Structure formats: structure tokens, C-alpha cells
Image (cartoon, rainbow, N blue to C red; front, side, top):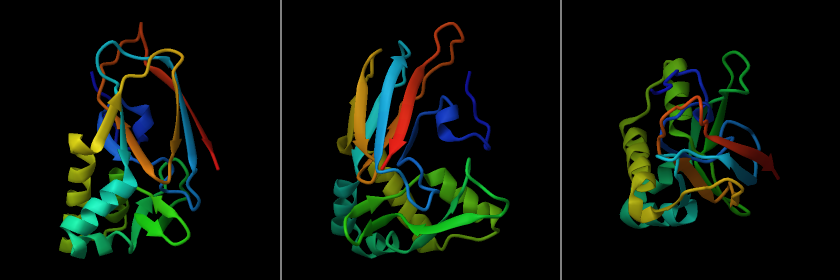
Length: 181
């Protein structure tokens, strides 16, 4: 059984993938993400971690023309924090005073759809390449959190996601999340 409501935020579903940083739709995304495991599934629900600095370095090396696209502003849907017709317009990668990655693919595609805007061919291609790099197992570190485990993530550098898991109302997956700067 899968939850796939388009209006839900990623953490409210059991879908896998969607490697992202938390709070990309906020003016100031949280710098630190703390996740603690209260209960995990026997099958699925592995945590996936990806180093954004390494990904951006790979993009600059393999696709220098596309890498420049990520430093330009994209619209982000403000799901969970929205005011009607309000969107954030920020780059995916910044490197002014320190490196910052801001990304959740669905929030970008939904923002453009809701605003009746089309992503240019170059921007669509750039997002496809970024998603492929994030999904590449060579760029990922996977771990299975167990009850009592806690991980601390620099949300400006490390993107994360999870593998899908099945819903079992008698044995619910439960992770706590805390954001801080």
C-alpha cells in the first residue's frame, strides 16, 4: 500500500527516493537536521545520504554548462508553509560565504506547473542530470536506522532520502526530526 497524494509533503508518505534537503521552500532552510529513530520497518526505510559538495563538483566536471544553471534562481512551491500563490525564487546551489544546497525536485516541478510556466529545455535537462547524480548509488551512503539511533546532518551540504517501505498499522515506522540553525 502506498500513499501518493500530491498535496502531502514527502515525510508524510512511504515513497522512496526524492533525495532532497529539508526546508528548500524556506528563505532560510535549517542548517542542522537531527533525526532519531523510534521504530523502523523490517523491510525498506533505509536512510540515504548524499554529499552535495561532491555532487556539484561532479556536475561542474562532467557538465560545466549545466552546472551554471543551478546557480540561477528556480521557483519552489512553499508546500506546508504556503500562502496562496506564493513561491520562493532561489538557486539550488550557492557558494557565496559557504556552500548551500537547496533541493526537492517535486517542489520545483509543482511550482512551475502551478504558475503555468515551462522550464526551459536546458533547465529540465539540468534537473534530470542532478536527479540522476543524486540517485546514483556510487554517490550515496545508505544506512538502516534502528530504534535509538540518531543522526546529525548539515542540511546545507548533505541531501537525504530513504528507500520506500510498506505501511503496517501494527508496526509503524517512526522517526523524529528536529531542525535548527
